[in-house]
Image 1 (cartoon, rainbow over the protein chains, first blue to last red):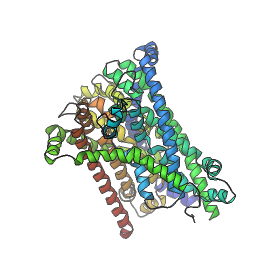
Image 2: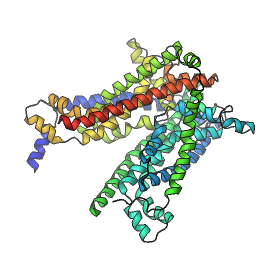
Image 3: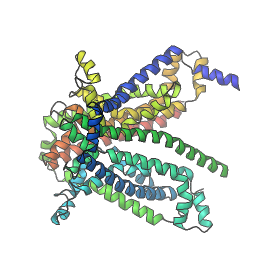
Image 4: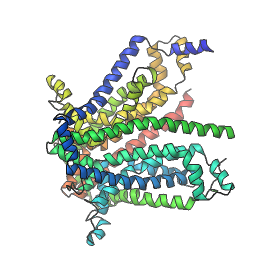
Length: 291
Length: 275
């Protein structure tokens, strides 16, 4: 077997010069468009020294924005986690008309411009909005306040957990759960003892992606926040304010924290992707074994 | 094999899913269309047929096309190298490709502006060559390349990984040169993925706000994109005008995605017949 295999490999092998040139070109593109923008964030963050960096990070307004962002992210990710689990259970464990349509509807927010995502909530929940005017009549402010930021972020991050779980649970099939059912397990027991262990990596992956998007959402939040200082400025908005007021070093200092989070996300993603792929392959294998 | 509906929780989970989707996605998006339905034709004309709107659409579509084209070519190159040529640090580069998805758009925006402004690391070099990048349409293209970069790479990578090496061997044994094999054997198999990736990058670019807003300068008639125009109208409390532009942009993007989807289904349907 080794002879034809190596012949195949040789046929698909490019000359060394071509390989070196193409690799260099690809690395140049990656450096130009990915590495340098990232490097510039850290260079600018420390342009005025470490002291200025710490001062910028410890600024009360910045700390407020961190607290607000963490609050919004916690609410939004928790809600979309429950939604993702419910949606994945309904879509993958039952057959019903409109199942496909439901799946595409779940992905819809991904293809909508962040600015439009913000706009729809102004139209709906703003002081003059269809629903918002009734709240406004009772003095409840939704847009340009915390609830507006929460719903806009809810909208843009809605798909992330569900779209990780649906393919995973689809591939896993429902035999194990059905077996648990025949053994007398109740619904919640089945979910906790059978489903959850099988999807835990995918679930974690979805949570990481949703959190990253929620922490960093700018366009949609920018539209509904109103940029009220010390009230509705999330971390990305704080970066924008600092930047627009020419506090470049401070803006980049805060931005560098978000960049570290992004690097962490990318690393976790790479790690979890392998786990999820392994989980999927494992499930497919047991599936095949049963058939 | 699957028996539909023995497991518990159907009504509860489906009911919750539908209610949640209705409240968070369907009703909010519907307000966009009920809002425009009340428009008079003259009002629509006034909202959409101004030089400022047309210029914004021209820039957004043109820059998104340019960026999607760039990422199609260079995204393919990066995917090719990542799949085919092992080099030290390949895993790190592979992970880094997702950076534009993970980095908050405002951070990407200010970073690119600092990089490409006239006294930035790259802007200085460009300026020495007489090219201004930041605060010009070219800056918009650069930002959209950044944000669209992962799409083509991530679409093409699995396709290249799954290519049957026997096909390349067959081509080589039939006397094809490496370049011919690439053009006639590899490229046709990867092309649909490249196209899908480029379309996704285009759709994302068209609506992108955060990455673009800092580097573009947002000069009406010159460097103002459609998303910024929507925001500008919102800030002037021109909700109807903002909605009209938003609906036009959504319809354009939806039309494009549907057309390409239909073309690809047709291509897939025709493929076995060609063989």
